[in-house]
Image 1 (spheres, one colour):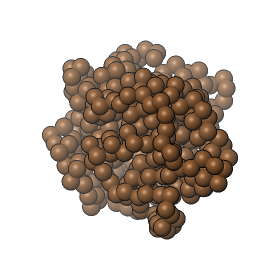
Image 2 (image 1 turned 120 degrees about the vertical axis):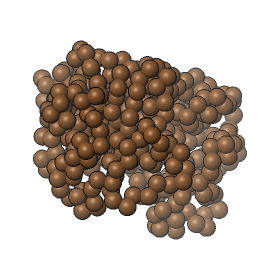
Image 3 (image 1 turned 30 degrees about the vertical axis):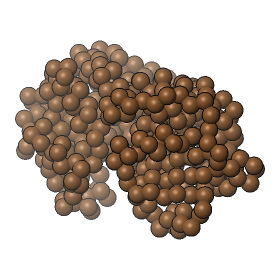
Image 4 (image 1 turned 180 degrees about the vertical axis):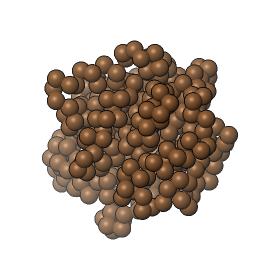
Length: 374
């Protein structure tokens, strides 16, 4: 099958190339159209994946984001000028809005079926703009397949955009497929833990902005120490928010480490007891899955991308992002059943294997092209 990916940030995330490579092993031919803003910079670490399988086009400017359909028409025009669309069997837009409208128009023009994925900005940014729920329904209703990274995001779309009697048609063509992990993590899984450090070692990994909600995590850290549970927090990643940097600097219970390569990051996972990142919004959050491969229980945000991949208490707990009491309680519940949860983390991390995920994508694509139900 020939598949066209429509992306807007292929150049800054490995997940698209990972899926392309594994789908290629199954016999599919995948081309990514990376629609970006003018003067977009590609970081050195991603230049290796900007090869002949990718059509990278600067097709809109920074002001076009204020004019949704105008921007989407520019993406559509760039695709038409650079891709022989009629040669493809399926289109997959990896965001509902920033590419999904172009996929919808390409379907109307060429009759090619399309799949759309839902991500953080689709549900937590665009859907809050007046009129965009109607656009979402148009795109979803005409799609042959709809991909969600978690059950939580599917439920949120249905509750936001569809009456009860209209939801079954969306559910029937939907698939819940998580992001996969780089093989490195599953090839280097750790042993289950039976005890924790003293003080307990909390870990947060990622680009540290306001969305990562370190304010709340630091309050949890202080509450644990005040309540007689000595704890230390390690934060790994570039701190890009000045207020958060001020909050972290000078706190003797917090260590801040810049970006690390995965080989070095592995040791920090293995020397941590609980991964805690109650972000306000997450499309998925692969760092939770990375932590699981090392037997580290996870605390994640209720209703966001990682939520509902597992029942409560199996690999950790979902929490309300700004509820210090609930997050502190989640830490204590993990500590009270630590060995079992750590073992569950390693066993359940196998669902993030790209081979299995590629098979699920293959079924979604095949059923979408055939016009069948998922």
